[in-house]
Length: 181
Image (tube, rainbow, N blue to C red):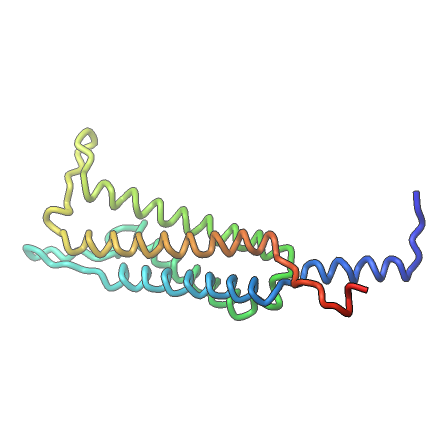
């Protein structure tokens, strides 16, 4: 067992802090991915929230399905999270909890997209054994917009998924000539 002096402990702590500091390219990439996730998830929420189609006196909106309501809510929360982490990425990149918060956000987005996709699949092709008929033949515009919103949600999921990987392994800036001595 070795005994460390206070100066050695301070130097080791300073070195660890330097290793956790991210390079400028890493910060720009992470911020850009988070802004992409913000834009795509916000667009997905707006497309679903404004989606409606009338046919034979029956109006179909996202409010008819709990999974689409949850999809809109989670996409709005995902957009807010992406915006906040994009704004404060320089301060947050060295925090260990950022990766875990990113994972939680990505998993919630994946779950809401999967749930909405499952309902959309039944609407598109039906499920004859359970008595569900394909309604997208009657409400094709509504279903097409739903498919666009699912694609947007997948883009936001993928963008923050890559940013999550970056938050797990922040790249240190290259050493400066003065610090390499």
